[in-house]
Structures are given as structure tokens and as C-alpha cells.
Amino acid sequence: MSEKNTTSMTYFILVGFSDVPELQVPIFLLVLYIYLITLGGNLIILLLVCLDSHLHTPMYFFLCNLSIIDLCSTTVTLHHILVIFVTGNNEVSFIGCMIQMHFFSWFSSASLMLLAAMAYDRYVAVCKPLHYTTIMNVKVCASLSIFCWLLSLQQMSTPTVMISQYSCYTSNIINHFFCEVIALMNLSCSDTSVLKLLTYTCGGLIVTFTPFLLTFISYVFIITTIMRIKTSTGRSKAFYTCSSHITAVMLLYTTCICQYLTPSGTFKSAKLLALFNTAMVPMLNPFIYSLKNKDVKSAMERKLKYFMSTV
View 1 (cartoon, helix red, strand yellow):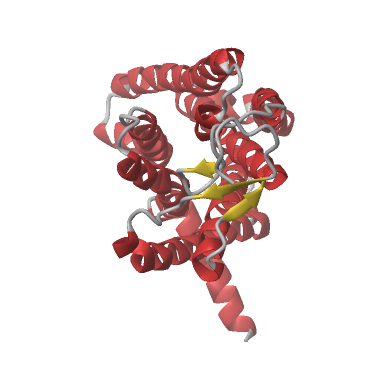
View 2 (tube, rainbow, N blue to C red):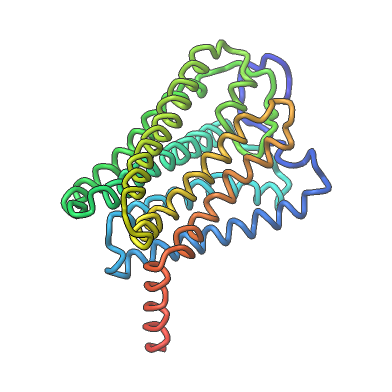
């Protein structure tokens, strides 16, 4: 079903990585390994924060939200790659494609907004330490989190509704390993000018640039405050509180920039970058926040000692 100007689309065919047959088995093993590590790492973070009272702070509340997003986004995309490799069936229904596209877009935008909220939390911790507990109270943290989830949902719902109403596609073959807005938009033979404008304004300006700008402004104030600290020990301690977050921010935005600024003709490299963005970043986040964080390592040691003592 790959006729031109299709008027009724019932399913799509995901090319995946079938255009690089020599990498089929290595990519399957890599994706499986990454998916299992991502599940394990983020579940450990969630369990530690829930079970250890020392981690009941705003920073780890936001980290739990980020772990949930990482778990959901990788499940939405990676599990389908594994199914394709195992079954050999790379067909996805039209409704299934719309659902996958919507949830991936939602979780991706939510992660960007949540990182901006976490940047604000680090700003308050460094620049207003005496008022930290007052400013970042339970109500504020919950409101910021809900705002990130709901705003990203609202921003991503409109493009999904619009593209689901398109009835004309030049082909049902998607040269990607999951359903993505841009990939589907390029296949449509309907008038996509409004959708393109909405995608670049909402996706580019509101969902991507605005969180980046807010994060950047927060770190301008953070760095300015750190530079005013007279002792090197104080500066190191202040920078340490932000090092994990800024590493995660740089990793995510770097991969996003590389993925979406790749020339459209280089499909193989674009898909590999997309795989890194959708798989490696969620896998690395727990390591970034745990290996560089004394609180998480201490909580893990306490729970391991408690577990060993009860066995």
C-alpha cells in the first residue's frame, strides 16, 4: 500500500534500520541493553526517592518527574523497535501511529519544560539559599510540575489532531523507526502550511526555545552568584549543586540540535542521532544524577544496608 495520493490510510510501514542490514543485530542488542538499563536506572531513582526521607526535597521531586518521563518516552519508542526486530512486522496502524507520535511529542516537550523548572530550583538554591524552603514549598513544586505536564500536553495535542485529520498521503512508508510529526508531515500531500507554522512556532518557540531561554537566564544568575563567593570551597560547593542538572541540559539540547539540524538527505545519520536522543539520553540521566550526587549514593548505601540486615 504505497500508492500516490492515498485517500484512506489504515496503516504505515516503519522502515526502521532495515536500510542498514549489516547493523540489524548490533542495533537490536544495543536497543535491548539500553532499554533494560533505562528501566532499571530510572526505577531505582524512583524507589530511592520514595523510600528515603532524606531525598524528599524539591530537587528529587523534579528528578522523579524526569525519571517518569524517561521511562514513558523510551517505552513509547524503543519497545516498538524491539517488536519489529523480533516479529519482522514493521506495520503500525494509523491510530497506533497517531498515539505514538502524540505521546512521544508530549514526553519530549515535557522533559524540556521540566529541565527549565529544575533550573529555577537550582537558581533559588544558589542565589536565595536562606529562602529556599519558603520559595520552593510543596505547593510551588507541585504547581510547576503540573504546569510542565499540562502545557506540553496542550501544545502537542493540536498538531496531533490536525495531522490525524489528513486523508491524503503520498506513501505509507515512514523512513524512521517511530512515528514522528515531521516524518508524517513530509509524507502528507494535503496542505500542511498551517501545521508547519504551528510546529515551528509551538515546537520551536514555546516548547524548545522558551525553556532553553529560561534555563539560560537561571544559569546566568547562578554563575554570577557563584563568582561572587569569596572562597574556592564555597564556589565548588555551589557549582556542585548544579553540575548534574547542567550536564543533563547540555546533553539533551546538544542531541536535539544535532538531530534536527542534520541535512534532510542523510537519513541514516538522522536516524542514528534520533536513536541516541530517544534512547541514550534517558539511559544516562540516572547515572548523571546518581554517580555525581552524594545524596543519592548515600541513600542507596542506606537501603542496601537495610536490605542486607533484613535478609
